[in-house]
Structures are given as structure tokens and as C-alpha cells.
Image (cartoon, rainbow over all chains, first blue to last red; front, side, top):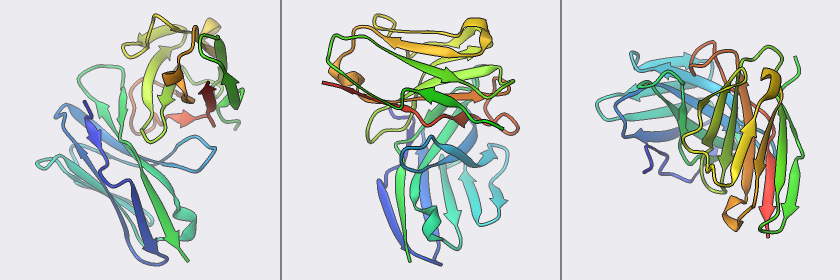
Length: 114
Length: 117
């Protein structure tokens, strides 16, 4: 039962262009969403997040959009840089409990070409 | 500030053997998490500790996996006996509080890559 899905295993974009990574979820009890970035042989690092009461959050080159009615969120990176090449995980917090449990998607590998 | 430390970084064992992983969280972080990440999948929470108490172990295969966090600091995750399907990266993470979200970011260690032959 995959509650958080990243349907694109990989994405390749040219340096300077926009990267758009997508994530879909099924559980309406998710109340907080996060994006993590992972380089090889390292653990994931937090990138940006958004509460379910908002539809947009921006931090520098990174913007996350949330469409609750569609149960869809996306991460926009503008402009993309070669150093952004990594695996990106979408994660959702289950707000029905008090543990803050995160459910992760499968990840999307982003390659930014110079 | 030192990050989350894990050891060993790599481990190769044969099925039915035992293995243990160690994690040292960021100083002062009350919550510690163990995740399993199988190749091609996202991390899956195995167990969550708040200080030295278990908050969530609903996805821990308790017939073969065990974890402890003595004194509310370091933690060990053990697999006994290992199966082929346990081959994965085991990630440890820590956070100040319990709820994920703003100001309670989970910081991950580099992980231990386990190969079961």
C-alpha cells in the first residue's frame, strides 16, 4: 500500500532550466509534507517543507506547491544547477497520531546537465 | 555540531547470521529513528524512540529485529537471523522532539549498507 508515490524514477534537465519533481499521496490525514535530498553514500538531508494549510512555500531556488484537492505536491527548482543532481524524496507526516511518523515516496533521481 | 554517526558503514553477512548496527544521535536530540531503505524504495520507519521509550515499532519485524536505546542516547539495531530480503541500507535519524515538521527536522546519518548472501 504505497501512500506516497513518486511516479517518475528519474528526471534529466539542462543547467539553468526548471526542474519539476512530482509527488502524489492518498491519505487525507497527512498534514505536513517534506522534501529530502540524498547524495550517494550519504543520508537524506532536509530541503523544504509545507504545511497542509498552505499551498506554496518558497526558499531561494526551491518552491514547493501543494494541491490538497488533487492530493498532489511538486518541487520546483529554478534555476537548476549541476550540484542539484541527487535523489529527491517526498515525505508526508501522518497527522492522525502523535508520533510524527513520516511516509516516504520511492524517490526521483534528478540529473542536471552542464 | 556533529551529525548523526553510524557504524559500520558496510556489512556483508550470510543468511541466518546475526548483525548489529550502532547509532549515535545528535547531542540533545530526544527522538531517534531507525529506517530501512531497500534499493529503489524510500526509507521505511522501523522503530522510533522518545528518549529510551519506544513510540512506534509497528513496522518492525519483531521475530528477527530488535532495537534498544539504553540511557536515551545511543541505539543499536539487531537482526537475528538475517534473511536475503534484509539487504538494504539502514538509516538512523534523530530530532529534537517527536512531531515531524518545522523546527523538528529529522537529521539522518550516512547509513549502514547491509548485504545478505
